[in-house]
Length: 396
Ligand code: ATP
Ligand code: MG
Image (cartoon, rainbow, N blue to C red; front, side, top):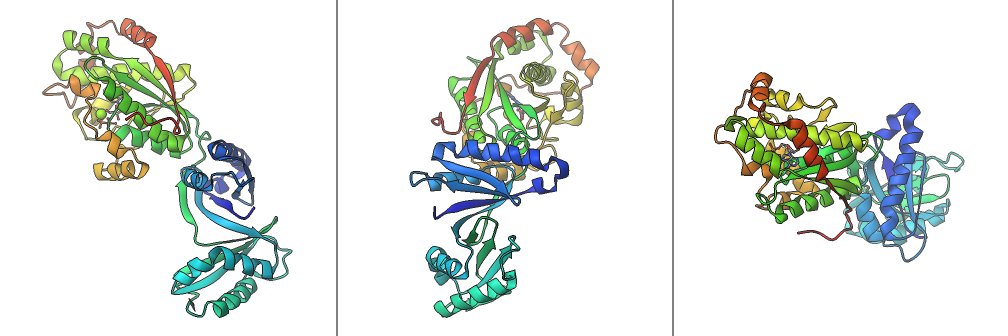
């Protein structure tokens, strides 16, 4: 065993009495996420997750990349474990970090000693190891204030660990500690980002997509499944419910005033999503709505749409600018797929002059010719449940 990952817990350390439960969840999540990469031991001690490969076959690079997408981790580093002995520590640094050190102009050693039985203080460890390294690397200056490179030494219970600078983790809370929610996933830029953001707050995510074959194509459906797959890189595997929306849209087109098309359609989406959500144990809905972005996302429109559901609707993008949303979409890798030009069911029946300040009374009147309950039940019979995993083949 000559390399191990140490991951520092984020906000979990603040969670007082629930800390144990949060840690257990995180450990489970890390174990599951490491499975595709071989045999790893995963344990948590002193607010740190240890991810230790158990044999030479383990795919360290794959595992390391995956560790960056696990919520609940603020920072992570690859370390070399060694005996808790100054010579062993010095040799481990030379072997493991010597080349990186040589590339820097200046360095310092920073030590932490959580094993208080170790006979030297952190400062004394840093001075001793720093002195030896300075002698062996005369071209690299010691600079304790603004070093280009920092060598870290951690004296922990089981061993000493040496490592270079840590990298930022995915942040957030461990998936599963925030309950379970149903995200209305379209093929656009926003809703995959919304799903990611709520997953980051510890929610397990399930998705529902409404598609209107033949008005929208098989490609548009694959695009949504591909977006879901990209989100599972962070959220872990998810169920995607595909609901046929064609009949509802045709009925709206044939029986309702055009200015209310989008609103009535969105009320159907919300209500159907809520029914699937409740049946699947989801306690909230998630949408990618964003105040003022389009006519159906004014405060008045959202009041009318939200009126059909009685569970919370989480809209993590509500106050963001498009640019901020795009930045996240790019970071999580959904943007390129989102901007592929396949049509969405919303765009097919878009009214020319949508109502931006509707009242609930107007909309109830506008939809009165529809048999809502029958249409909803019929749509629910079309639900197709698919399981999506990051390691599935890309769909596009
Ligand atoms: P997005 O980029 O997520 O498509 P948008 O800005 O295009 O959002 P709308 O098309 O008005 O906005 O949709 C608002 C929200 O409604 C979406 O973020 C998504 O949560 C949900 N939604 C829209 N269309 C669908 C669909 N076909 N299936 C499931 N959910 C949808
Ligand atoms: Mg859209």
